[in-house]
Length: 281
Image (cartoon, rainbow, N blue to C red; front, side, top):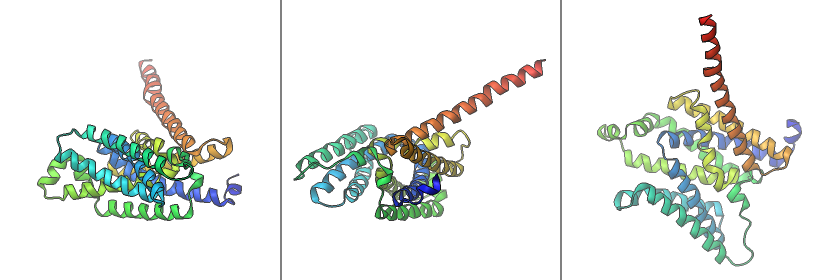
């Protein structure tokens, strides 16, 4: 069955997209979860819709518009939350709603027929083009190299920012680069699962990996593998059941999380109970 699907160019592109998305989201998602900035990544995800609307209005690639808007939003949240008197979570909520509002306004102002936004909102991995794959591959390589060369610095910042500052590390610069990589990872994977569901691709694999390890490095490996399994399974579900790919990918990841939790519950409760009973007897 799989060999037959590999004859289709769209499926091959989707498979490569699953590989690149799994690696990028596995690494960046681990950073997001470890630093407890899931809400921030959700704000960046939804604010990217503003860039999509501006891109349609200006007649440029909507993903390019989303990339620029997302990076500016991420840096803007960091800057204004430090310089202003608005709380961090409130600033995220402001940029979240502002991005969505700008996107709706500019799409409404765009001449001609309103574009079909389903791909951007809910994703369709089968629509990933060769150009999209090139961007995904380049970003994935950049993320891998960055985390290899600055791994220990990222660990310092993630788990003891105060000590990292005392140690003389460029904390602010590193955080700006990392948050920009978060924004670009979000944008480049919009077509995979969509704006609405993307936050799950950055958190569910890490939730599964956390059952097996608590170390940062191993969590990256396990999250990457889990993300790919979810993406590939969801892709197959989408094809054979003829359902939207974005929703099927997230559903596959949730099912996988449920199975892992059930397995660990049985191991640490039912099996341990049986062992205790046998010892008592």
